[in-house]
Amino acid sequence: MEEKCVFCSIVAGQVHAWKVLETDTTLAFLDSQPVSQYHTLIIPKAHYANIFTVPADVLADTMETLRQVSLLYKEKLGIDNLHIFNNSGLLAQQTVFHLHFHILPRYPGDGNDFPRMKRLDLSDRFDEMIIALQ
Image (cartoon, rainbow, N blue to C red; front, side, top):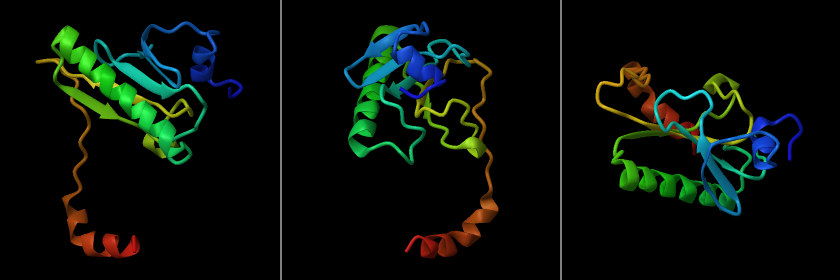
């Protein structure tokens, strides 16, 4: 448990959360600052700051819980439109530095346009970008 991490405090039972699904290694709970109904966070119970620090097996467990919650919402609530995302790092607007993924259900006319900041000019640099990865 990381000191002063609200998600670690939730895992430890020190802070209340509205749990949706819990496994031995993961926890899914409703976001306390929801953007839409059933906005859910999925976390590994062990503390990892972001996508860059989490071991592959823990990430796999977390993704399986994310899949199970998504299927639960589809089966029980008929939700079949979701945004699934992660913010890793300060510039990516991560505010709680415990790895977490969002399930953001979408509803007709909900008015929550997910930001799409297109930079079509970057396509001219694709060759350069691929070379940098080699």
